[in-house]
Length: 364
Image 1 (cartoon, rainbow, N blue to C red):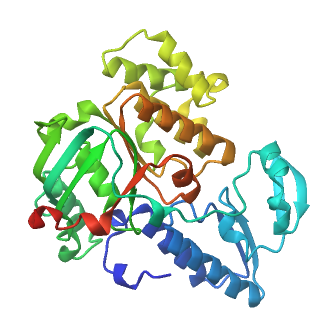
Image 2: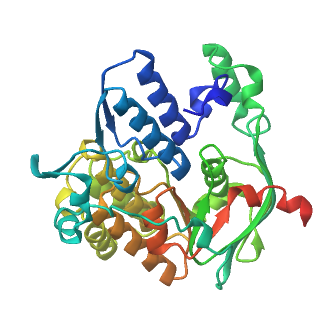
Image 3: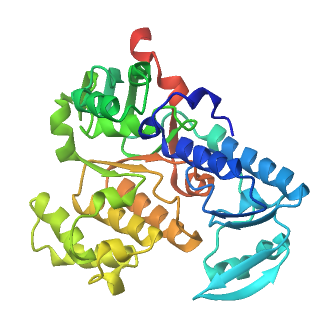
């Protein structure tokens, strides 16, 4: 599973995609004969997803029974022998993978595409638009982070890692400009995309120069101008109802009693009928839509989304894409961290590539 280089790392230091691969490897330790994988591709980069498909093909040839529950379909085209389509708790369609080639069937059940082109290489490094955020010589590591002391104490307390695992330079002299519109941030699992998102919102503090619309800004002040959607929606849901979550974000943005915005967000993300539900009672996809709505409620200049569609079906993925396009049209800078090739093809205007950002500050 490509995790040999991670053996000495604490689980807490891994990216979501790396955790996914570790979890898959752990399953195989007991040599089961039947596997049930729930959204196994959700946080994997396209290359890791292709490798997973090859691994499943090998296991299938050895006689394993494998059930894959996933919204992303294209990666299973060469490995799935049989497809079951469910709606409202019932199996409604059944057949070979070619069943999913039917566009009308996919639309009827809100399914994703059966074939997806990889658009990553075709995305330009920048698009013509005003610069919202510029970054120069940005570096970050946990050793020198403001939060590293507590983290190191916890790791020593629980003896979950060796000291060098926390000393890794995660961001090294990064430089780039983020323009209004939708910009994809592309990179392999563990390349530092999520860490960069946290630094750009002030959750972690690095070194370097950050300018917002041409004016230097302190890291601690970034939170006021950014909206962040984390990979794990549970970390961002604190209130007693869906409605209260959105209202709390409006209040924090000094926009209380904005009933029009509340209704627009509930409608845009198909949450109106769920407004009185407790957030932790929602499905994973519903939680994802809620945290995106909450981030937009802040009306931030910069919206950063980390794998916002990892658990979404086709209909809701398109709903999110339309919402991001609307933000772009309003002049917002949207930084989209995703391995979702379908989402990239729908709304990304340009791309920043992690392997090209490193050491740019030193070169300049």
